[in-house]
Length: 403
Image (cartoon, rainbow, N blue to C red):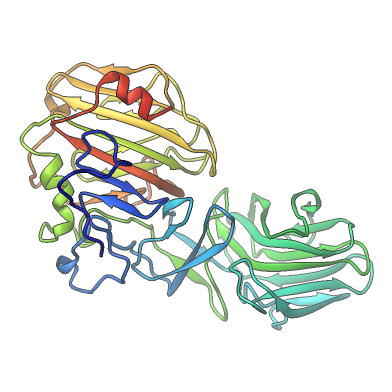
């Protein structure tokens, strides 16, 4: 835990901010972020951001250089150059996702050797696949009910220049990934989402002698792949990932509720500014609770929604594309802006007036609403989150902060 409150705000803090959480650079003003695992007594957590409710032993997320970084259970997944990650619930049904020498992978005219440095930088963690004849394959059959699913993997070319294909329907359909991979590093590639019964996933190397390195094969429900889940002999589940301002149990005893206690008080004006990137198929939550506030939108190329105000301009779609948003609210209503565009307003009071802490707020999470519905999970990362109380930014500052 880092002590963060000083007499004067550091130079990097946005003007007048009460809290400024710069996840990209691991610097925080006004509160603390816990990097250790959460205890079972959630009320003891002294943080603004506790770990996600994650049911796996470890989860991975890329940093800005593409290196996959492992994070233990209940620890916030914060990676350098990206920020705080929050993914939807998912299950990786592809077993031995890093080790294609295992018998669950059927090799035909392909030699598999676990001798490659992995996408996480660990030596001998990933597998090389070398074709010993034309159209060699390495496949795994998975017993699953018919459902929309997507198969992905981290792949790097080792030798040759021939066609490399992937499948999730036992080769009935092959997807060429040739143009997406290179010898310089791993790229996450995918088979387009399709409804498949009992998928058979894997690779085809068209040219004899060609070789690739493969890591973190993932077969999961949905349209787009999430960040990797490590498997060995059994499928692995990720719960909806909801880094939170307070303890995951939803009580009010945690010091992590400091943000709500000190910002959303007695109808005082408040504001929020965020930089984030998320899935192009989900609006995504930035802040979500069972009472005010709930803030989200934009990463699917739609509008940013803030306390009743919806921006005129739209967000930039897709993971890796950064959106910058800002919203301000007082007794007259709410104002919102995205990516330096035009200000939009919702000129009314009532529910848009900030409320004192009360029973309507039962939890407050980042990047997910917990249930994974409505706006849904961000399926991406928050790079920076800044909040103001009373001393809120002006119209001009809101536009400047989001350019």
